[in-house]
Image 1 (cartoon, rainbow, N blue to C red):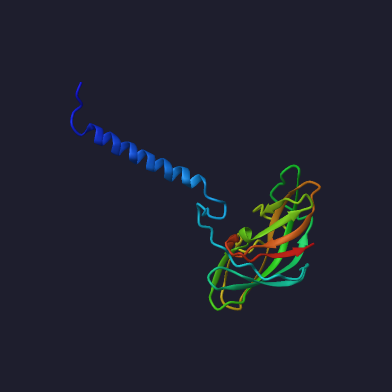
Image 2 (cartoon, helix red, strand yellow):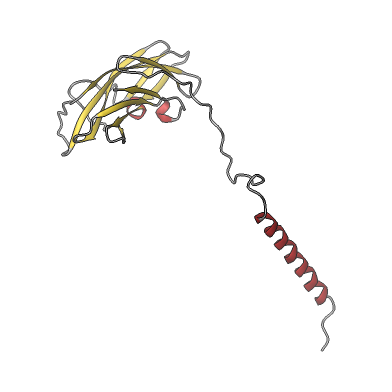
Length: 186
């Protein structure tokens, strides 16, 4: 039986290509951990400056995105906070009264409901409940617009599980996009 001309050469070329591919793939698995490169680029973010502990009444200056800054003061934690439009069973409501001042050069907008969270005695972090409390006003539904050197006062409400008390208030500028976070110990 005779083979058509060129089949042997094509088969040898195919086998050589397959062998080369196996060498490349096998060689990859033999790289040391030091030689491996990460699959995904992860940029390193600057670390915010260390701060001394902050407590009620203290003002922290925080960096926002876009080269802007705010000075935030946690003035009071209202515990319990009266909820005029009904309560969810098994929840205790609190409100954090704060002042936000634009200490940058540009007009800024923000949402205190997104920026403020509370850590409970159960070590869980709680976002705003968005509920209206009778004791204070929630900015303009959380929203604020501040010209340079202008300030706004308001409250952010939280619904904690019954029996859980707040231990920290956190303010994350720019709805948490900024790496800077202010922490007040209660």
